[in-house]
Length: 268
Image (cartoon, rainbow, N blue to C red; front, side):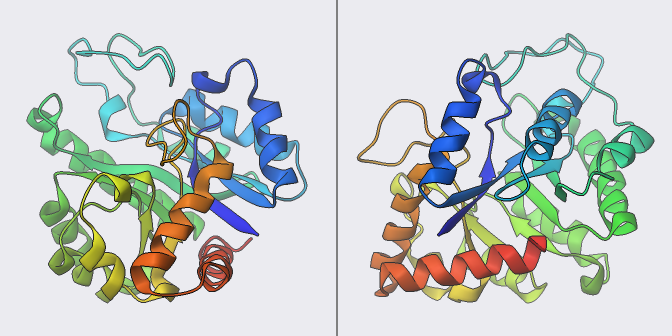
């Protein structure tokens, strides 16, 4: 058994066959958490999870690139959803109500994104991140953090809080070992996906204790070799295999421990 802790079958890339892909995953012993990026995809994730008694869960949250900034979006992502012209304003009560579903296991994905298109809205991103962290704390839910080119600032924000109040995972970790140590010292998990086939993260993978690692796909993105095209939850096995090889461990051990890690963090 494996748990894909960060999937997006709630995105438009699966509009025509999401149920087929979902069932293929379950048939192959792969559970999943479908993660929201704004209200529409968060709601869709909850609806999908509520149709299953086991193996399909949801996370709800507003991704930093979907924040309303008063300016038109530079580009859209047809595999996700059609961007609203002026983005979305975070509505605490609206997300709180959505997160009351028993199938919601986390707030996410939320965080900071300093890619060129979004870096000028740092202050806005930080404000909404803090609001959503408060939401997670109020609901006693872990957080799925998105962080691109902003690890030092995220670490600073997290350090301002009592580490006992923060539970979660740094999704798609791409930082340095030094930054990884900061997160691990706060009790957070590191999430690895197909990006490990593109970037040199061997030092981080080798040094991170297996009991602090989660595996994920971020599907439909970051398809791992030898597959190509659209990613999906069953391909999380390649991530587990890569981690096992890098750490010099058996695949079954990596599968078992990362599954237990996910069950512990997300209480599933």
